[in-house]
Amino acid sequence: MPDIILKYQAEIWQSIGETFVMVGLSIAFALLVGLPVGTLLYLCRKGQLLENRSIYSGLNIFVNIVRSFPFLLLVVFLIPFTRFIVGTAIGTMAATVPLSIVAIAYYSRLVEQALLEIPRGIIESAVSMGASVLEIIFKFLFVEARSSLVLGLTTSTISFISYSTVMGIVGGGGVGDFAIRYGYQRFETELMIYIIVMMIIFVQAIQFTGTTIAKKLDKK
Image (tube, rainbow, N blue to C red; front, side, top):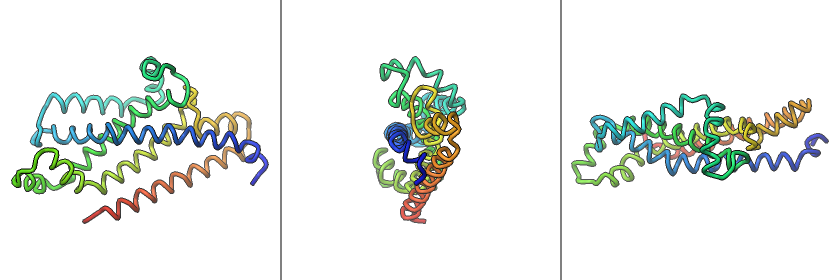
């Protein structure tokens, strides 16, 4: 291992840990909030089980605004909200607030799209059998769309990693911030290349894992 890597080994592991915290919490919010929001978007659409124009319009506007907001500007815009939620606008935990909001919006749209791919006949069959809304969601919708949901989460996770690299502007740390401060600004090109290669391998591993799981879950 090159001396420059050994020199900053402690900082590298710290930055990796910060990235895991930011991305991990973002994934958690994507699943805990984004999945229900995406499901509601689907169910409240025109012609669906819980058709409700008001709910659909409200959620749709939220998702569209967040997804169309330049992420860097969103981070700055949310600083007062972040300070209100976690008590500070600086640090790894503060960085998770805008990341989590983006994660919710991003994944909810992918969930909606995944559910829209389910043949309408399956839902009609479930209704004819007297299944409740919750039973339709968990025993039919999620089961039929599970492969697409996993692929969507995989794509989202990779996007969250990309977003996390700019969190240095609020002192969030992470691998991206480390590469800029120690690699680029100190002209340690070898160190920056090492970080880039490490991130490429990490992202490829996530993509491979997600794709493999999705294939195993795909019943088609």
